[in-house]
Image 1: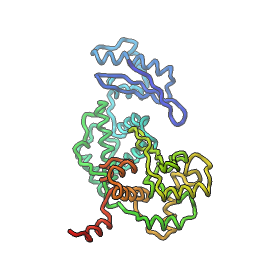
Image 2: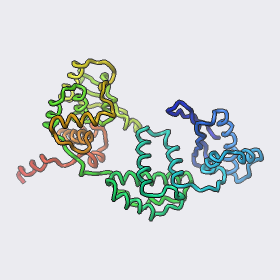
Image 3: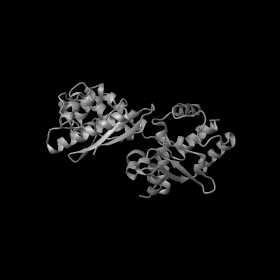
Image 4: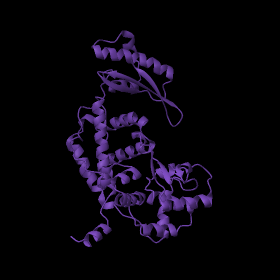
Length: 370
């Protein structure tokens, strides 16, 4: 039986989605925001009839055929893509991507969806999205990779190629395309060791000492001493600070989907000092630690200016490398288990994106007995 679901959009309107099982696979038809619930319920009845006709190889009854004949073209195409009726117009690559994004959007965070759209816009600079999706060849996919190698970094290229491959993989599952031309194209890796930079503690202290804003100093400490992700600092609340137990609970939107919406780290001495200073100077005016003018949009600019004011050369991946610097310290002092638990990622992720040899490692090796 077809089931009707209602999804709330950001503009307050409702979009209706009908889900059903056809030939053992769960499928969906998005009805958009212009179909009121009553019409959507009527559609679910006709969809049940179409599903039965496809499953048993029979012809739908006359009233169902009449209903199909009078459908608007957009809904007709959607039913055709779901495998319920025959449609004659093949999909372009742009249309396939639009359908993929529409299907994925309800389960994605806004920032993730923006990232996917950016990857497709970058791909569109190097290939014709008006081409029929089924006519895109392995040679076309390889050509895209070659063009991306000339214009973007390896991790960016990898992200674009993997996004395109995922579109076609989804399209094959939905029986919208017959093949995935990106399946056999080497996509590379997100790992980019050339941009890793260790920020020593004496540099951290130099930057903090030159700053007279307690909130900005606390934010800097959350990244460099606490090892928080960019977004995690803005999720932090005063209630997360256990002063007596000397623990700090980190709320993590990124890992919430995997059932790990928070982790507990030590209330490191330097982190505690900066939070105590912030509390004494500005008080607790709201539940959030970072509650005034530093928002997620202005943080990079503020920290960049903070570093420049201290006379310290800027490094790439400004906040990412603050976090990875702390990961390297924790790994060396407390081991792999602590690094994984306190920084909040797997050992494999740590090896690929965070841990690297330091100058002190070479110095220690040179001074050794062997």
